[in-house]
Image: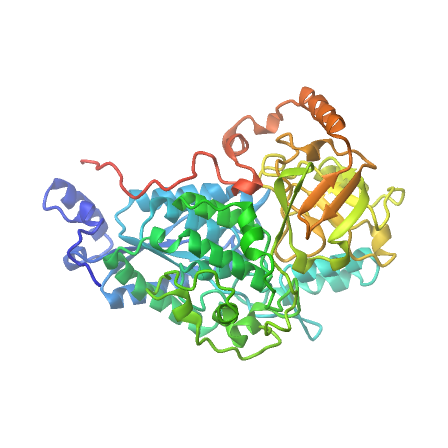
Length: 580
Ligand code: FES
């Protein structure tokens, strides 16, 4: 179904035999590009988040070279360009602070340049949503290629997983079970190859979401970064994007409401990160799809978690690929009638079901059968109530089942500094039944919405052997973390949500399965507290200038995807012509 007669977008730059065409071509020719490369070939942008400061994306130049081979082979011409690389591990205050900034870079880089289609090189947590958001706002033909996960970490003869082992070992240090030296010795073993975090954290989750959404080739999510098949996939993606450019397979044909519903179901089956709820909403918003938090309840709840990966389970992404990867999971869902939209179109031109219906599964410990799930109902729980009128999120597969319904008294921390100052106090009035409440860590309150929602437990309780408590905040949680943690409370405290007025000793009731989160004070009392709170608010001086001001002024709440209000929507790829 090639449509080579359709004028290519890049012809607006390179196609004219006039002064403007001369200027556009001439400057490109300083790179040694011969004339025939400008003769009607699709120009394929390779949008690269390579950076040595984003270690999980540091191998992307090699990945780009393999994409280029595929583009050349299929008759296109590749042009690689850099975009802001917001890596999770180094960036302060948090990579989420710059997700929208990166998406703006991507959007304007695509729209303003002579490209007919793009390959999005993604990997670290926020690079995947940022590039999909930017490309979706332009609605050009696009395919994503993930960098792939690291090989399994190794420490003292056993496998260790990115991030998850940090949470585990640091709590063991606090509880006096291991030495600091032993803790530090795990560093090198945790990250021993190129690639992204190898647990089912946010990076792996978003790679799975991209594959489930249909914007990648099959198996994109799980092939290890250093496996030669990762580079074959990059090559094949380069070939395919040339066809997509010629056939005008834009993102809007892939990123439909049906595709997002498939992704929500897949997220439950893989035990995916809570961050997916924010990122999918933001991506959907850019392509004009209305996705609501309640879609996670409607589609996700009742779905068994089949993938036995850390942090919910035992294994790592390397085993996941060897066991059959995401196509195996989707096959399981489809055979059980749990794939909402099998006919959804994917980047290779086939439906999601066509791509997966015969996918082999080699290891049923890693990809479990339906009658032996890791968690019988692994869909994210959306809870609401007078403490979270616009919703909050809990990941039951990473929680303690007995705590999913709990009533306890609040131990309140006004912000993360307050938490750090007091959590280790031996006099802290806290028991294992208390509910830890952390305020002012939401999108505006801790600009970027830090991943501190899985706040560590009081050391004195850890020493007693307590391993989990109910924790509530307007923060996010790393996808590699675990615990009975209520996250993304909306509206956040800084925006005047009821979380702002929780007091020490208040009773709080959580019922994840019923979907409720209740602060046990009267409506009149809550109204009075909120009125008193509003009276004493002042604008924090740190937020009066620079990008931080733009962020705080315009970021939407977690239930709206934390996009900037002015970025929501698809603006297309048209741009006014400039005459030299
Ligand atoms: Fe980049 Fe985990 S820190 S993938």
